[in-house]
Length: 77
Image (tube, rainbow, N blue to C red; front, side):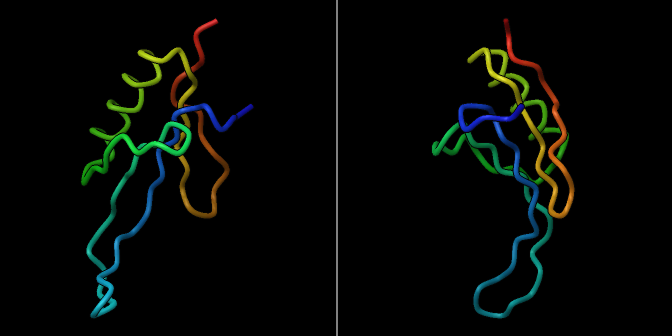
């Protein structure tokens, strides 16, 4: 079960605030309310999230809009 202390990767489409044009896909990593970076590439983001999860002993999850969360790393017991 996902908790607020887990590592979360949010996938989103960036939009220019002035022109409303799409800037492309981005992936941001969060642990609680602390950002741990934003990435242009899904593979880089997932690697960084897994590393952070291993470092902190937490689970990691990928959040895709409109989809249920996908666990990408398990919490250390």
